[in-house]
Length: 170
Image 1: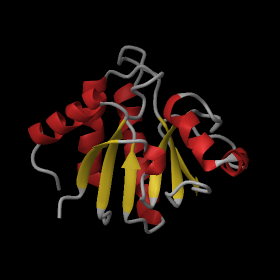
Image 2: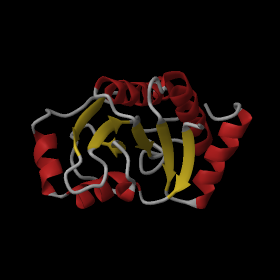
Image 3: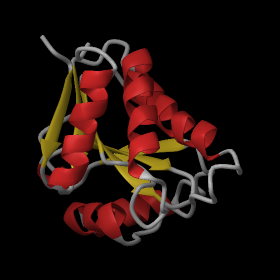
């Protein structure tokens, strides 16, 4: 079975063990995917996030999913793009590695990622996608299913192209 999928969908509606939130360091409801996840999960998500003391860039934290179909939310803080000279590639790779490690530690079988840092954080799509695919292929461990959930057709096409270029799905 192919473990990596690309879908164009609303991440808040996916039936997976965990969805990944492209979070900010304060773990507060923000814009984009982060705001959508907080709205869909309900105020209990924010209440739990406030108990975690934030999350540094490159790290990840896990909470319950509350009103989401997903049972958990993994909050990963990606880097803001500053031209690629401020360690952004390494920090983005750590987001994926740390999210996958949390999924493994909690015995999860399925996870869905948005395109972390490519929205308001300004990370260019192609290099971000290459990092995401590389890290998922290297670190999926015992996960049965990994979904790259894209907001639009352009990003979904980019993920499919990067996956095809880098070999067949694992």
